[in-house]
Length: 288
Ligand SMILES: NC(=O)c1ccc[n+]([C@@H]2O[C@H](COP(=O)([O-])OP(=O)(O)OC[C@H]3O[C@@H](n4cnc5c(N)ncnc54)[C@H](OP(=O)(O)O)[C@@H]3O)[C@@H](O)[C@H]2O)c1
Image (cartoon, rainbow, N blue to C red; front, side):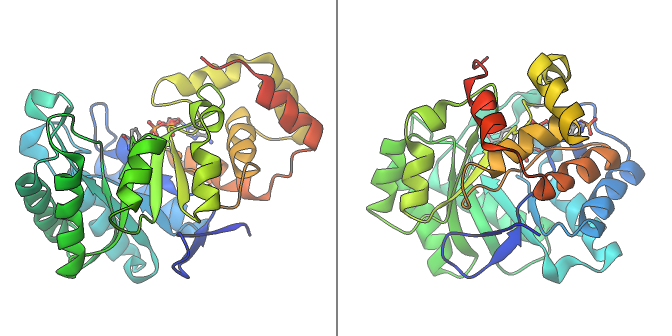
């Protein structure tokens, strides 16, 4: 079974995590179906779940995804063995997605996430995005203070550039970087961020790894993906995830799922070995 280490913390996880966002945003499934997704993930050996306080419908619903995950894991009896990585730094006014990296809001968000997840310490707390209205150092200092206070164990960043990551590393250890990355969006391969993370032993977490909430359907229309799916007796989604896994032992994709069948299929990417020739063909697939 392929494993990934979080930074160099000694914490190891199955190489495919669960992106829990589709369980709580607009169009979300009912609770029974959502629990089935989490159950299928755990039954398949999964142990890393990505969430955020803002995976919900709007500001009145903040923490929906975190509460759901906590309830499902408690019901399954798996809570102790699963890393639930959450985030702070956004808001959902009227259902919109806005950035807020104000230190006060980050602290309040973290306190509320601790309650929603019913824990004393969050294993991995990620800054959801850099707020252009707030000095990045102030946002980061808020996370460092939360770590010093024992409320979070490891700090991660999301939606960052290499320059922002480098400046953060001047202040503190960064365990992970979570950016959008998939076969149709290879920016972080081109700009060197993924190699930089590898060199610094930072776990790289590709979000929207099969193309995104709506974009993933494109996989099933790409002739190359269909051809490889037939060759490896797999699905196009599994091929796309296996391609990411082949790109480095520091890469931990978090495919989303609102159906148990989707995450069951995604987990199987960990045992799919693609040939060097096929990886090169996927590398050449044009972005967007
Ligand atoms: N940090 C950020 O700013 C940020 C932004 C976006 C997302 N994220 C995180 O990344 C996670 C994943 O991103 P995403 O949900 O946007 O996009 P994604 O994982 O690329 O695509 C998710 C959709 O693809 C379908 N899918 C996934 N694996 C499949 C499979 N093996 N077979 C068939 N269908 C499959 C699922 O369909 P069904 O719903 O039908 O199961 C799911 O709704 C999110 O859940 C969230 O945790 C983070």
